[in-house]
Length: 134
Image (cartoon, rainbow, N blue to C red; front, side, top):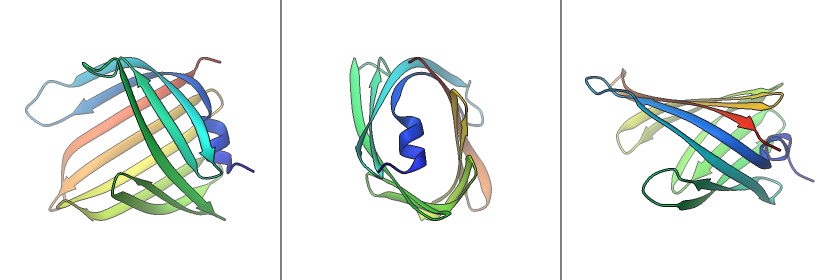
């Protein structure tokens, strides 16, 4: 049985992504993503046209135990709570930065926000919303 986050994420999505870094123009991308469950807590994400590569695939683990949620991907790990349709996660030290992550499951829209802090100062923010295509 899939956890409710993995179950929600399975499918085809149109992604609208914005990254903001001080003193740089915002970087905006729109591309398609396909997500499929590998197991109850792992989703495989395939991005089409994300960057100069035509295809980009990665896996993300979203381990849910009651309200406790741990997200991990390629050595990165953040922990927090998933309550209702909303998650708040934190990683206090990854490569010298602190990360605050928020996920929201809203009907046919998935919202992802990642804030990156260096010594308590916000140095980068990434905001994405994905609209279900299927």
